Structures are given as C-alpha cells and as structure tokens.
Length: 408
Image 1 (cartoon, helix red, strand yellow):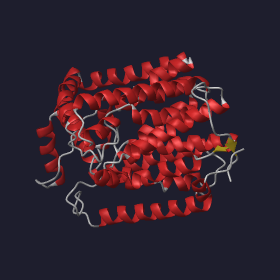
Image 2 (tube, one colour):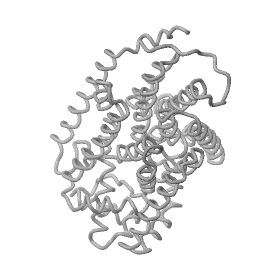
Image 3 (cartoon, one colour):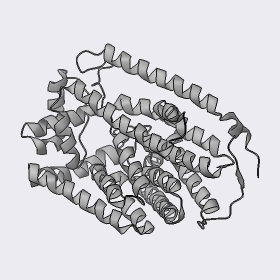
Image 4 (cartoon, one colour):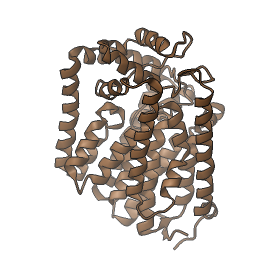
C-alpha cells in the first residue's frame, strides 16, 4: 500500500477539531454582532438580517395578503421589502423560486421577521446536522466538524435554504435502497429548488429503483398541484414570466457577482468568455457530472452514491453560490463514512480538508484572482467518489494508479 502524501499527514483529527472550534466560535461571535448591532431588521451594514431571507419573508407576506403572483414582480417586491425593513435604501433581493417554495415562505411570514429567520435557520440546520449524525453515527467529532464548517457560517449569514436542500438530497440518497418511497418523497420535494434536482431522475433510473422514481415524481407533482389549489394558475404564470429576466440579469449578466457564483458558467464569464462559450462549458461539465454520478449510482456503495450525487448536483447548474456548498459538506460526510469502512486513498485527506475550508475564502480568492476555489472542490469530491467506486466496487472508469492506505 502506498504511503500517505505529505499533506495527508498534516490533516489530523486534532487539527480538524481545532479548526472547527475556531470557525464555530467566529460564526457565533459574528452572528451575535450582527444581531446586537442591528436596527430593527437591518444590520449595521445596511442590509436585512439574513440578507437573502428578506425575499423569502416578503414573498410569504405578499402571499398571505392576497398578492402571491406579485412576489415575482421585482419592483413590487422591492417596495414591500422597503416597507418591511423601514428603510428606503435597503438592497433588493429578488424572489426567483418556483411556487412550491412559496408554501414555506407563507408559513414563515406568519411570524415576525426576526423570529421567522431564527426558526428557519435553526430547524433546517438541525436537520442537516442530524443527517450528518446518521451518516457517521460512531464518529464523536462528526457533529463538531460539521457545525464548525465554514459553509455553515456563510449559509447562516445569508439566511439561505442550503441546509434544507442538503438534507433533502442527502437524506433521499441515504434511504434510496432501504426505504425507496420515503427517499422519493424527500427527493421530489426538491422541486422547490429544481436546479439541484436535474440529475435525480437519471440517478434513480441508473439505480433501477423505480419505486423511488415514482415516489419522487408523485411528490413533485403533488406539491405543484397544491400550489394551484391554493393560489391558482397566476402564480405559475408569474413564475414563468420572470424566468427570462432572471436568466438575463442574474445568470448571464452576473448581477450577484461572479465571485459569489461557483459554477463553470460563471467561471468562463469571469474570465471574459462569451455567453455561448459559458453555456457550452456548463453543458459539458453538467453532462460529465451526471454520467459520472449515474455510474457511481449503479455500482457504488450507499456512501459513495451520496457523495457523488451531492457533489454532482453542484456542478449541474450555472447558478450555484458558495452557501450552496452545504451540499458538499454532506458529501464529505458520505466520503468519510466510506473511508472509515474501507480505508483511505492517497490524497483523500488533503482534498477533503480543501473542500471543507474552501467556502471560507472561496469568494475572496475568486474576486482577487479569478480562481474558482469552490468549483474545484466540487469537482474533486466527485472525482474522489468515482475513484473509490472504481477501486472498491468494480466501476469501470479509468485505470487507477493509487492503492488504498488505511487512515491514520
């Protein structure tokens, strides 16, 4: 068996604990500062607390007050955000989601803004951490390293939904063999954020799990029909009418900031490439990611299937931000589970450490150097899952040059 690399030997359990404690402390201190210095629902930087949560709460408020279709009307929603936050200079956070997410938003909007934000983040974070606990039940440090991951700080700061997305996709992949109907229910609920669900039908078909496939389809259809029953066709019409503007402003023009978007499309655009070239590169990476994840789904262990699915999901959309890499955190947990069961390969500890720390500096490094730190992390985790499946599960990809080594 080959010896671990020099960088592999630097990645120890004790150093992982120290890093997680430091990041977790910084997360708590930072959040307390933002809340403690806020004026009402606006932080000291002039942004809504939870920034992106502003579009969730205001869209829900509009739905609760008979204005559901207007949530996709950008000028109208901005006016509501100004009123909610009592600040005419508040930045605008648009509502780009399909109508099923409006059901959650309308429930959250029945609470005061800050209470809804705290509840939303606490419940979804707890679900994501519970999933990590189920993936690594015997690892005493798993919860600490997961809670202290830099991406948790990023997601909490943005009031985002990545904890829920990771819980649904990761939970679905974990249950797919043992409880296919429950797995399909979780995977079908991803209709609320469909850019991370495009590979699910392919993975389920590749695995041949038609019960999960049917359950996912029925769940997605039921959620869409429920929105029709509650608000009627106008909400879907408003959503479809908003898509060209979302594509042109948010995706193609990069209004969010290229350094924040961690996709092949955004990387090409940040490097000065044209929109057609960016779409071509995105299409190529998406195809490779889906095929790779599907091959792992056919042959790989449960843990490797989960790691491949969550990392590939991040590569399959032109619009993925650094907080979405909560999915990669769960993918790391899946890989760790497989490493505990079957040993570690050379360079794996190094790449896992890289992927764990990447969201802490990925945005800044991308802004300064145009180097796609987080994109490289997602590619690396998918490659590691495929390599392990090729070595341990007979998946035919390419000849392997490294033999397994036991973890230190």
